[in-house]
Image (cartoon, rainbow, N blue to C red; front, side):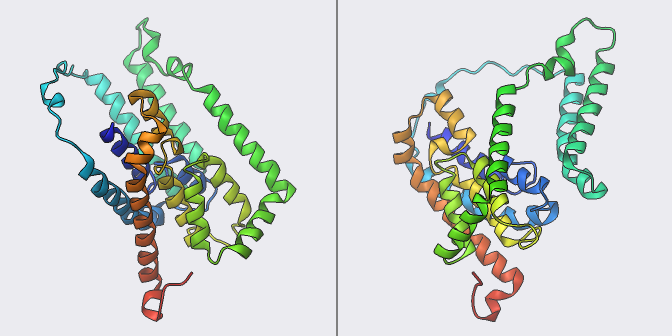
Length: 293
């Protein structure tokens, strides 16, 4: 179970530094709060520090266990050549999405649809003349998690209503008046993502702060991406990977809070400190007498 918790921390930290790695980073990227190259270059090191800081704390709790060495695993079955072609084509399609969007300036969803079309064509060619429809894209599309898609749609529509009513702007004003800096606001949002799903939190933040005031790749957006992505590791219910761990390994809330939450919090704050120090160095603030808020 502890190794499973480490995987949760690694998955959340690893998804922050690419536009397609985590849903919250993807949301910010699609809405032009973030762009590809600065996101990768400026969030990679804080993500690594977050991961290493958490694992350094958690690894001390690992106990010697001979059960893994004594277990008998079935031999791996080789993947057919055409299966490998489809697999690597899928990986290439995902990796090409940020490149496609960066080079063409077109919306990212067009890149995803282009990749889907390429895989659709490839699988139709490979299985041409066969009666097995299960190996083609339409069969895969029929298994889409429609309820999950509608869940996110409902969240975004609700946030849109709050935005149009002006409540999100009022909340932004309240936070700015009661919290001393944007860094602390982003940190609080990250901690809140351990209790509340990070998708509505980030969607609300996007409505609270105007892109005209905080431009693309502003420190606020990068810090929100980092905090919302990694803050969910602090509690087991704070991320989709944590919820999956609860179902697969029967991990309960109290066990995770006792064994993992402190380590995840250590990595979380270490990642934030690394980002702030890195940003201060890149902007020259560190050499001008201090870190800007």
